[in-house]
Structures are given as structure tokens and as C-alpha cells.
Amino acid sequence: MRLLLVEDDRALGQGIRVALGAEGYTLDWLQDGVATLHALRTESFDLLLLDLVLPRLHGLDLLQQLRAEQHDLPVLILTARDGTAERIAGLDAGADDYLVKPFDVEELKARVRALLRRSQGRAQPMLE
Image 1 (cartoon, one colour):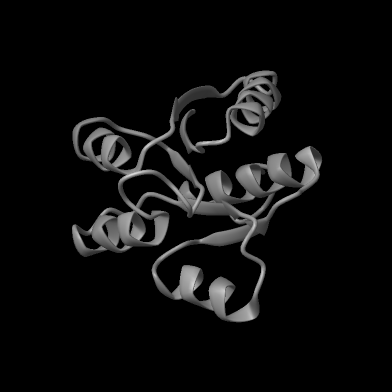
Image 2: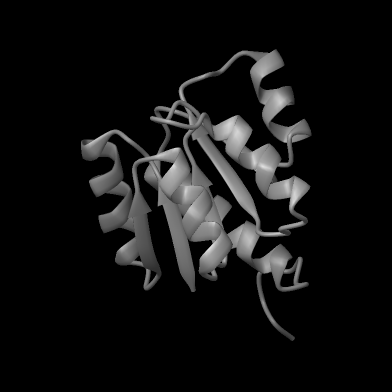
């Protein structure tokens, strides 16, 4: 599975990269909203992990453009913005899930697994 992480905090990005890489995911990491939009238009990913406060293009604007272009890529927002109105705005803009920083790495891994299962048409954790 190829994941795209969009996070401008170097320490957090490196930590997520190590944690998800250890799970066997291929993880591309970008730190800029405009570069991310270009990558999403030209390459294929299985999941987008998206921070909201990014240089050059806010994550919410990026998500709205992505959905306007009919991309059905699963999106997990990772952000420090924890207000109810902000969570609602993120989900209404097209995010599939919303995780507030700081978060537990094990919870991040579980949410990634759940989103990937659903995107493949499997709601159950085990194949029968």
C-alpha cells in the first residue's frame, strides 16, 4: 500500500514515516499543499494523511479541490485543530476520518488499517 503523508512538521513527519514504514507501508512525504495537489493529480496513492495548516495551500482547500475533481482517495486529516466546528468542516469537505494531534501512534495505525479496509470494500478486519 502506498500512502501519502502531507505534514510540514519535520519531527512529526519523520515519526509517522518510521511508524507506518515499520508496518510495511510505502510512505511518500510532502510538506507543501501545492506540491501535494500536483502529486495527487499525477500519481496513485491508496490513502492520504493530511495536515491542515500547510505552506502555499491550506489542507482544507486542497481536500475540496481533490473532491471537486472526483478523487475518491480515502483521506485522514491529522491536525491540532480540535474544535467541533473544525472537525465538522473537515469531514464535510470530504475527509473520511479526523485525528487530533497529539495522537497515539497505535490509534493512527488502526485508523489507517480501517480506512484501507473500507476502501477495498471490506468492513471486517478478517477475510473469510
